[in-house]
Every structure is written in C-alpha cells, then in structure tokens.
Amino acid sequence: MKFYNIHDNGDGTADITLRPYRKEARKEDEEEEIRIMRGVVLFDGIENDIRERFSAWCESAEKIIL
Image (cartoon, rainbow, N blue to C red; front, side, top):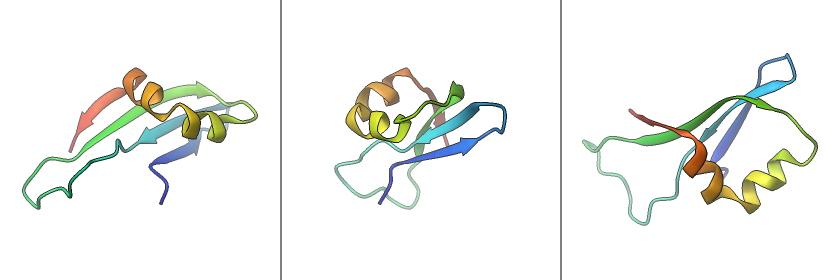
C-alpha cells in the first residue's frame, strides 16, 4: 500500500499527497489527516526520495484535516 500520491500537473511540477502512518486504525467518527505539497518540481527518483525520507516530506507538507 502506498502512503503517497503524485499528481503530475503537466507543467514540470506535481502536487504530492501524503498519508502519515497511524499506529492504530482510524475510528469511523475520527477526522482523517493528510499532508499535501503543491507545485513540487518533478525530478528523477522522486518516488525513492519520498519513500526514503517519508517523515521529512510529511513534516514539510501542509496539514489538511478531512
């Protein structure tokens, strides 16, 4: 299961959505948290970088509560 999604904007940038790891399952009435980074310049190896430094990506991203 991937905890990130890369949406190519078609202009050399991407919006990256991250779902931080939860130790326990989310309850039905509990809010869901995602992180987003908009306008990230795409580069070779971006997926490897996200996987290797996932916590750092999450810390840098904007927090969204759903």
